[in-house]
Image: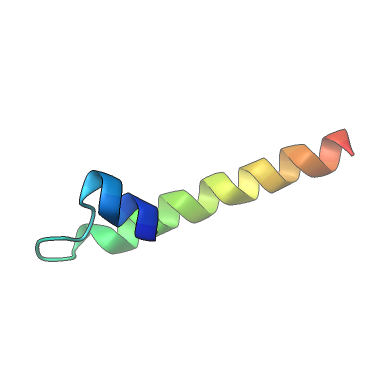
Length: 40
């Protein structure tokens, strides 16, 4: 989340987008873990 804030300025203004960005980030991280477990 810190990287998103620094590179894409997520949450730099009012912060309303932080919840949405965090939800999407968590979904993608879970998807990556699921793929990794299937390969292993």
